[in-house]
Image (cartoon, rainbow, N blue to C red; front, side, top):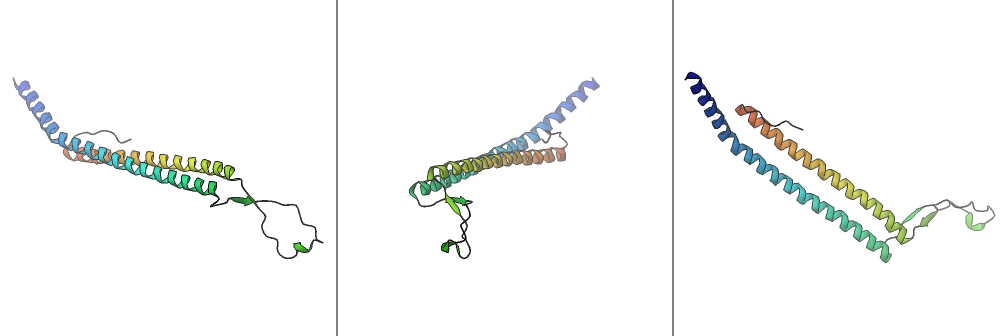
Length: 149
């Protein structure tokens, strides 16, 4: 009979622990969901910002509002040419607007990839922070929590 009493007391202690940790776990889960939702919203806004910048730049390229040039190497000027006197200006070659838009598209894809990677890192850190907080709480009350990634 004594062992039955010990088992019942043990079950009562486990039930009490579960009752005390369940609200904390639910609060932690709710906080995690809210934190991830906020990070997702920030990620969507950043993606929208990068796309708007790309669209604006492509519009400027198409309308001639901006021209893109690159350094170019030209053949040497003959010394007897009177226009060659003084310091020569840096030679530049203007890119075709369609080619400049293609290059801008590549850089925009890179910007979007960086935004996505940063969002992934932010989500990981959010989960890690919330899990560490829950583990610290569980340690204080004597419960073993989940492992930190």
